Every structure is written in C-alpha cells, then in structure tokens.
Image 1: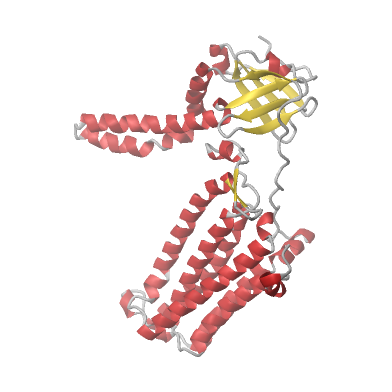
Image 2: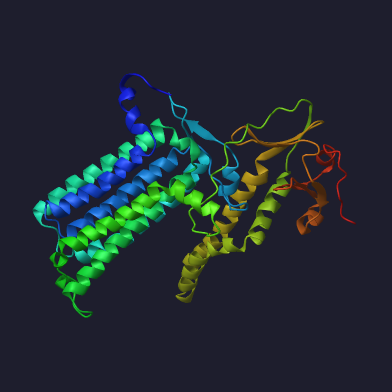
Length: 427
C-alpha cells in the first residue's frame, strides 16, 4: 500500500469515513450556500438535486465496472448465468484491479434503469418547477455547483474505492446498490419542494406555467436540505445500522450478506486424464430446442413481432407477415440455442481417476472440479428427450447446488469417477 511520495498527502484524508464524509459535506454545503448566500429559489435547488442524481448514478456505474468481485446471477438465468460462471476478467495494467465479465453483464441493465429513473425524476420535478427556465445568474451558479459535486464524488470514489481498495469488497451489484437510496433521498427532497411550491401558488386546475418557484421561503428550502442530509448520513453510517439490524429482533433492511470472496482457481489438468466427453451434435441441437420448452417466457420475446405480423396479415401483406412470423420464432429459438451452447455445448468434461473437470472451450478455462465423495447424491435420469435420443443425464448433488451433464450417449465414464453407486431409472 503506498505511503510515500505524492500519495502521502492523500493518506490523512483517506482514513475511516473521511472521503465519503467530505463528499456528503460538500453535497450539503453547496446547496446551503446557494440558498442562503446566492438567493437560489426552489427551481435552482431542484435542478441541482437532479444533476446530483445523475452524478451519483454515473459514479455508481464506474464503481460497478471496477468491482473486485464477480457478480452472481440466479441459477437458470438465460445466457447471463452460464456467462457469469466463466470467471473471466480483464486486468488493468499496473494495478491489481480487473474488470469481470459478469460485471459487464450487469452494468448495461443497471445503466439503463438508472438513466430511466433520472429521466422520470427530471420530468416530475425539474419539468414542473423549472417550467419557465432558470435566471441567467442562477443557471451559472448551478452549473458551477454541479461541477463541484462531480469533483467531490469523483474524489471520494478514487480515494475510498480505488486508493483504499474498497473495490475488493464489492461486486457490480453491491457497488451500485447505494445509489438507489441516494436517489430516493434526492427524489423525495425534490418532490417535497414541488409539492410545497404547487400548494403555495396554484390550485388543482391551474396550468404548470402558473407555478412560482419563489413562493417557497428560505426556512422550507433549508429544511429540505437538512432532510436530505439526514438520509445521506444514514447511508454514511450504514455499517452501524446494519450491525444494529443484525443484533435486534427488528428487520430494518439495513443488514445484507456481503458477496462471496473470489473462489480459488479450479485445478486442471487432471493427474490422470483418461477421457474427454462432449455432447454430440444431435444432442446439442435437440437440447437447444428443448430449452425453449423449459423456458416458456422465451416466447414473450417473439410476442411483439408476432402481433405486428398479425396486423400485416389482416392487411393482406403476406410477405411482411411471414417475415415477422419467422422473426417471432427465430428470436426465442436463437436465445435458447445460445444459452444451451454456453451451458453444455461449449463445455467438455474431462474424466480422470481422481476427479471430473468441466472445461470451457470458448475461453479455455476450467469451470468446476468434482472429486469422489464431494457429492452427496449421484443419479442417472432419463428425461423425455433422453429416451428419444437414447442418452442419459447425470445429476451430481453437491449439497448446496447441483451439477447436471445432460444428453450423454455413454454416461458410464462420468459415473465411474465416483465411488458412490449411482441411482438409475427402473427401466
């Protein structure tokens, strides 16, 4: 950890909660100075809060990108789950930081949700109170204040998350979690201002242009700033609230299970590798089609083009209707095929005397390793598809999770790895 040179100046500021506390103080003092000293009205304060929400969302996405632990997905999640199982990362030169593939899967969805929330909040707050625009002087000071908030949040992220190594304790999912509470505080403060302004100036049937942002006085604006500060302090001391939550019989929602540490690399190759087993081409194709049947929600992806195609069919545009019908079928089948390929088709199973290793042929990495007696149960099942293809599916129960190897033409080499006798179907 650096302690000399230019970074020695940063060390006193990087202790404890100081980086985040300074960011909270900046986010409180800037609007307070604007309201008290610069004569900001409700419109200027709401505009600043809206920009602050955008800044918090941006840096949350940045923290998620460089999170030091891989993200987790619910078992069975299409495409994302098998991709996240591949512990692939891109190392950042001259640092021990890395960008996980699983983080890249989380962030586009998170960024889209945060952008949508930011747009909706802006419509409901800034779009109402700032209907006539800000005065030039207020606009200039709000712009400078926004730059100050951006710099404060950037400094807190770099020092606390980067310099102090906070990224090592987070996945992308936990890194962006805090921005939602921060955003709720900003949204609630802005809504309070909008409500008070509307109640003080217009009736229920008056147009939005009749709203006067100057109708709310200084005490009310300072009260809103104090209310937001209280929520920010709750986030700053969230660890103490979590400890209280865990030690009491009340469920306040502050405690949460931290992400699991990065697992040890899977040991490979085998000491005595005797055979490599892969799914047959017939099994890969049939398994992809069967995946569509097991995930009925996939057909929702084809619902929109199917409905549009139906409208064209009503208008006797048969060529367009047929093309859209093909798209409605191709989209869910393609998604199912990609998911099945990632889970099973692109995986080979290396069978040895001392272990069974699943090896990813796409990225050239070992996915998991099971040794004899790691399992709590071992079964050979024959699904509807197995019976028609003359194959078998090996199910390995590890207690907390299951590993399935489906559609094996000859499952005996896999079963022979284990000392436990496998349960087999009656017929």
